[in-house]
Image (tube, rainbow, N blue to C red; front, side, top):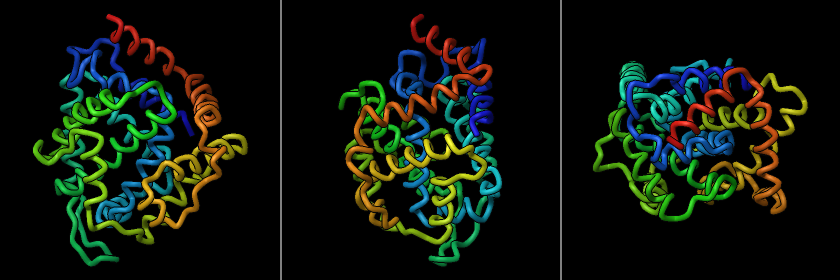
Length: 280
Protein backbone atom coordinates (compact mmCIF):
# COMPACT_ATOMS: atom_id res chain seq x y z
CA UNK A 1 0.00 0.00 0.00
CA UNK A 2 2.53 2.60 1.13
CA UNK A 3 5.48 1.64 -1.05
CA UNK A 4 4.26 3.77 -4.02
CA UNK A 5 3.65 6.69 -1.65
CA UNK A 6 7.15 6.32 -0.21
CA UNK A 7 8.72 6.32 -3.68
CA UNK A 8 6.71 9.42 -4.66
CA UNK A 9 7.82 11.19 -1.50
CA UNK A 10 11.49 10.38 -2.04
CA UNK A 11 11.43 11.51 -5.68
CA UNK A 12 9.57 14.73 -4.97
CA UNK A 13 11.95 16.12 -2.32
CA UNK A 14 15.00 17.02 -4.38
CA UNK A 15 18.49 16.60 -2.94
CA UNK A 16 19.88 19.62 -4.82
CA UNK A 17 17.07 22.01 -5.76
CA UNK A 18 18.00 24.95 -7.98
CA UNK A 19 16.05 27.43 -5.87
CA UNK A 20 13.52 27.68 -3.03
CA UNK A 21 10.58 26.89 -5.29
CA UNK A 22 7.16 28.50 -5.31
CA UNK A 23 6.84 28.79 -1.53
CA UNK A 24 10.15 28.37 0.24
CA UNK A 25 11.22 26.76 3.53
CA UNK A 26 9.71 29.51 5.72
CA UNK A 27 6.24 29.28 4.20
CA UNK A 28 3.13 27.93 5.90
CA UNK A 29 2.76 25.52 2.99
CA UNK A 30 6.04 23.84 3.90
CA UNK A 31 5.13 23.73 7.57
CA UNK A 32 1.65 22.30 7.04
CA UNK A 33 2.55 19.79 4.33
CA UNK A 34 5.09 18.01 6.50
CA UNK A 35 2.38 17.12 9.01
CA UNK A 36 1.93 13.40 9.64
CA UNK A 37 -1.88 13.67 9.42
CA UNK A 38 -1.82 13.99 5.63
CA UNK A 39 -3.24 10.48 4.90
CA UNK A 40 -6.33 11.37 6.92
CA UNK A 41 -6.62 14.69 5.09
CA UNK A 42 -6.35 12.82 1.79
CA UNK A 43 -9.30 10.56 2.63
CA UNK A 44 -11.47 13.53 3.60
CA UNK A 45 -10.38 15.46 0.52
CA UNK A 46 -11.43 12.68 -1.82
CA UNK A 47 -14.81 12.44 -0.11
CA UNK A 48 -15.49 16.15 -0.58
CA UNK A 49 -14.20 16.29 -4.15
CA UNK A 50 -16.32 13.30 -5.23
CA UNK A 51 -19.53 15.21 -4.46
CA UNK A 52 -19.22 17.36 -7.58
CA UNK A 53 -20.81 15.18 -10.28
CA UNK A 54 -18.80 16.65 -13.14
CA UNK A 55 -15.48 16.33 -11.34
CA UNK A 56 -16.39 12.75 -10.43
CA UNK A 57 -17.48 11.96 -13.99
CA UNK A 58 -14.10 13.04 -15.30
CA UNK A 59 -12.34 10.63 -12.97
CA UNK A 60 -14.79 7.77 -13.56
CA UNK A 61 -14.75 8.03 -17.35
CA UNK A 62 -11.06 8.72 -17.92
CA UNK A 63 -9.21 6.75 -15.26
CA UNK A 64 -8.77 3.12 -14.21
CA UNK A 65 -7.79 4.14 -10.69
CA UNK A 66 -10.04 1.40 -9.19
CA UNK A 67 -7.47 -1.18 -10.29
CA UNK A 68 -4.68 0.59 -8.41
CA UNK A 69 -6.12 3.16 -5.96
CA UNK A 70 -2.86 3.60 -4.08
CA UNK A 71 -0.96 4.11 -7.31
CA UNK A 72 -3.34 6.94 -8.17
CA UNK A 73 -3.01 8.34 -4.66
CA UNK A 74 0.77 8.19 -4.96
CA UNK A 75 0.66 10.11 -8.25
CA UNK A 76 -1.48 12.83 -6.69
CA UNK A 77 0.72 12.96 -3.59
CA UNK A 78 3.81 13.18 -5.80
CA UNK A 79 2.34 16.18 -7.59
CA UNK A 80 1.47 17.98 -4.34
CA UNK A 81 4.92 17.26 -2.88
CA UNK A 82 6.74 18.38 -6.04
CA UNK A 83 4.88 21.68 -6.18
CA UNK A 84 5.48 22.14 -2.45
CA UNK A 85 9.13 21.16 -2.06
CA UNK A 86 10.52 21.11 -5.58
CA UNK A 87 12.38 23.97 -7.19
CA UNK A 88 10.52 26.34 -9.50
CA UNK A 89 11.34 24.36 -12.66
CA UNK A 90 10.11 21.11 -11.10
CA UNK A 91 6.88 22.70 -9.89
CA UNK A 92 6.18 24.37 -13.23
CA UNK A 93 6.90 21.15 -15.12
CA UNK A 94 4.58 19.14 -12.87
CA UNK A 95 1.79 21.67 -13.35
CA UNK A 96 2.32 21.69 -17.13
CA UNK A 97 1.95 17.90 -17.23
CA UNK A 98 -1.32 18.09 -15.29
CA UNK A 99 -2.67 20.81 -17.60
CA UNK A 100 -1.74 18.70 -20.64
CA UNK A 101 -3.60 15.67 -19.26
CA UNK A 102 -6.64 17.80 -18.50
CA UNK A 103 -7.01 18.84 -22.16
CA UNK A 104 -8.02 15.26 -23.00
CA UNK A 105 -10.45 14.77 -20.10
CA UNK A 106 -13.87 15.83 -21.32
CA UNK A 107 -17.26 14.28 -21.87
CA UNK A 108 -20.82 14.21 -20.59
CA UNK A 109 -21.93 13.21 -17.11
CA UNK A 110 -24.49 10.43 -17.41
CA UNK A 111 -26.38 11.54 -14.28
CA UNK A 112 -26.83 15.27 -14.85
CA UNK A 113 -26.50 15.19 -18.63
CA UNK A 114 -24.06 18.10 -18.41
CA UNK A 115 -20.86 18.39 -20.41
CA UNK A 116 -17.59 18.75 -18.57
CA UNK A 117 -13.97 19.64 -19.26
CA UNK A 118 -11.27 18.91 -16.68
CA UNK A 119 -9.56 22.18 -17.62
CA UNK A 120 -12.69 24.13 -16.62
CA UNK A 121 -11.57 26.58 -13.89
CA UNK A 122 -14.78 25.91 -11.94
CA UNK A 123 -13.97 22.19 -11.66
CA UNK A 124 -10.32 22.87 -10.88
CA UNK A 125 -11.36 25.26 -8.13
CA UNK A 126 -13.71 22.68 -6.59
CA UNK A 127 -10.93 20.09 -6.42
CA UNK A 128 -8.51 22.66 -5.01
CA UNK A 129 -10.96 23.82 -2.36
CA UNK A 130 -11.79 20.28 -1.27
CA UNK A 131 -8.11 19.55 -0.79
CA UNK A 132 -7.19 22.75 1.05
CA UNK A 133 -10.27 22.71 3.28
CA UNK A 134 -9.54 19.11 4.25
CA UNK A 135 -5.89 19.77 5.03
CA UNK A 136 -6.76 22.74 7.25
CA UNK A 137 -9.50 20.88 9.10
CA UNK A 138 -7.44 17.76 9.74
CA UNK A 139 -4.21 19.52 10.70
CA UNK A 140 -6.04 21.84 13.10
CA UNK A 141 -7.81 18.94 14.79
CA UNK A 142 -5.18 16.22 14.74
CA UNK A 143 -1.87 17.65 13.59
CA UNK A 144 0.66 20.13 14.87
CA UNK A 145 -0.57 23.45 16.18
CA UNK A 146 -2.23 25.65 13.57
CA UNK A 147 -4.00 28.71 14.93
CA UNK A 148 -6.59 30.74 13.03
CA UNK A 149 -4.11 33.30 11.67
CA UNK A 150 -1.71 30.63 10.43
CA UNK A 151 -4.60 28.70 8.87
CA UNK A 152 -5.66 31.80 6.93
CA UNK A 153 -2.07 32.37 5.86
CA UNK A 154 -1.86 28.78 4.63
CA UNK A 155 -5.08 29.07 2.60
CA UNK A 156 -3.82 32.33 1.06
CA UNK A 157 -0.45 30.80 0.12
CA UNK A 158 -2.17 27.76 -1.38
CA UNK A 159 -3.93 29.97 -3.92
CA UNK A 160 -0.78 29.48 -5.98
CA UNK A 161 -1.61 25.79 -6.26
CA UNK A 162 -4.86 26.65 -8.01
CA UNK A 163 -3.37 29.36 -10.20
CA UNK A 164 -0.64 27.20 -11.75
CA UNK A 165 -3.18 24.74 -13.13
CA UNK A 166 -5.50 27.36 -14.60
CA UNK A 167 -7.73 28.98 -11.97
CA UNK A 168 -7.79 32.81 -12.17
CA UNK A 169 -6.29 34.30 -9.02
CA UNK A 170 -9.38 36.43 -8.41
CA UNK A 171 -11.54 33.30 -8.01
CA UNK A 172 -9.47 31.49 -5.38
CA UNK A 173 -10.58 31.79 -1.72
CA UNK A 174 -7.78 33.11 0.46
CA UNK A 175 -9.10 32.53 3.98
CA UNK A 176 -10.61 29.64 5.91
CA UNK A 177 -14.02 31.27 6.09
CA UNK A 178 -14.23 32.19 2.39
CA UNK A 179 -13.07 28.67 1.52
CA UNK A 180 -15.90 27.10 3.54
CA UNK A 181 -18.38 29.61 2.11
CA UNK A 182 -17.30 28.72 -1.42
CA UNK A 183 -17.78 24.97 -0.89
CA UNK A 184 -21.28 25.52 0.47
CA UNK A 185 -22.17 27.96 -2.31
CA UNK A 186 -21.63 25.48 -5.15
CA UNK A 187 -25.11 24.37 -6.21
CA UNK A 188 -24.01 21.43 -8.34
CA UNK A 189 -23.29 19.01 -5.48
CA UNK A 190 -24.65 15.49 -5.67
CA UNK A 191 -23.86 11.92 -4.65
CA UNK A 192 -23.77 10.07 -7.96
CA UNK A 193 -23.38 6.29 -8.31
CA UNK A 194 -19.80 6.90 -9.48
CA UNK A 195 -19.03 8.87 -6.32
CA UNK A 196 -20.66 6.26 -4.10
CA UNK A 197 -18.65 3.47 -5.74
CA UNK A 198 -15.43 5.46 -5.54
CA UNK A 199 -15.74 6.29 -1.86
CA UNK A 200 -16.59 2.67 -1.05
CA UNK A 201 -13.16 1.78 -2.48
CA UNK A 202 -11.45 4.67 -0.68
CA UNK A 203 -12.87 3.54 2.66
CA UNK A 204 -12.18 -0.15 2.03
CA UNK A 205 -9.34 -0.43 -0.51
CA UNK A 206 -8.28 -3.82 -1.82
CA UNK A 207 -5.03 -5.54 -0.97
CA UNK A 208 -4.55 -4.49 2.64
CA UNK A 209 -3.38 -6.92 5.30
CA UNK A 210 -5.68 -7.41 8.27
CA UNK A 211 -3.88 -5.00 10.62
CA UNK A 212 -3.61 -2.22 8.06
CA UNK A 213 -7.23 -2.69 7.00
CA UNK A 214 -8.44 -2.21 10.56
CA UNK A 215 -6.30 0.91 10.93
CA UNK A 216 -7.50 2.29 7.60
CA UNK A 217 -11.15 1.63 8.48
CA UNK A 218 -10.76 3.59 11.71
CA UNK A 219 -9.12 6.49 9.87
CA UNK A 220 -11.95 6.40 7.34
CA UNK A 221 -14.51 6.75 10.11
CA UNK A 222 -12.60 9.69 11.52
CA UNK A 223 -12.59 11.29 8.05
CA UNK A 224 -16.37 10.82 7.89
CA UNK A 225 -16.70 12.50 11.26
CA UNK A 226 -14.76 15.57 10.09
CA UNK A 227 -16.86 16.14 6.96
CA UNK A 228 -19.03 19.25 6.75
CA UNK A 229 -22.61 18.36 7.78
CA UNK A 230 -23.88 18.85 4.23
CA UNK A 231 -21.33 16.37 2.87
CA UNK A 232 -21.97 13.71 5.51
CA UNK A 233 -25.70 14.09 4.90
CA UNK A 234 -25.24 13.55 1.16
CA UNK A 235 -23.40 10.30 1.82
CA UNK A 236 -25.96 9.22 4.40
CA UNK A 237 -23.28 8.47 6.97
CA UNK A 238 -24.02 8.53 10.66
CA UNK A 239 -21.71 10.53 12.90
CA UNK A 240 -18.99 8.24 14.33
CA UNK A 241 -18.88 7.60 18.10
CA UNK A 242 -17.45 10.65 19.93
CA UNK A 243 -14.66 8.62 21.52
CA UNK A 244 -13.37 7.66 18.06
CA UNK A 245 -13.02 11.35 17.17
CA UNK A 246 -10.97 12.37 20.21
CA UNK A 247 -7.59 13.91 19.42
CA UNK A 248 -5.23 11.52 21.19
CA UNK A 249 -6.71 8.23 19.90
CA UNK A 250 -6.69 9.63 16.37
CA UNK A 251 -3.10 10.80 16.72
CA UNK A 252 -2.19 7.27 17.78
CA UNK A 253 -3.81 5.92 14.61
CA UNK A 254 -1.91 8.46 12.52
CA UNK A 255 1.30 7.62 14.34
CA UNK A 256 0.93 3.91 13.69
CA UNK A 257 0.43 4.51 9.96
CA UNK A 258 3.30 6.98 9.83
CA UNK A 259 5.65 4.59 11.63
CA UNK A 260 5.08 2.06 8.87
CA UNK A 261 5.50 4.73 6.19
CA UNK A 262 8.80 5.96 7.59
CA UNK A 263 10.23 2.44 7.51
CA UNK A 264 10.32 2.51 3.70
CA UNK A 265 13.66 3.38 2.05
CA UNK A 266 14.18 7.06 1.36
CA UNK A 267 11.36 8.47 3.48
CA UNK A 268 13.41 9.38 6.51
CA UNK A 269 16.16 10.87 4.35
CA UNK A 270 13.63 13.02 2.43
CA UNK A 271 12.14 14.25 5.69
CA UNK A 272 15.59 15.15 6.95
CA UNK A 273 16.24 17.17 3.78
CA UNK A 274 13.03 19.14 4.42
CA UNK A 275 13.92 19.78 8.07
CA UNK A 276 17.44 20.91 7.22
CA UNK A 277 16.20 23.38 4.62
CA UNK A 278 13.63 24.79 7.02
CA UNK A 279 16.24 25.27 9.75
CA UNK A 280 18.69 26.89 7.35
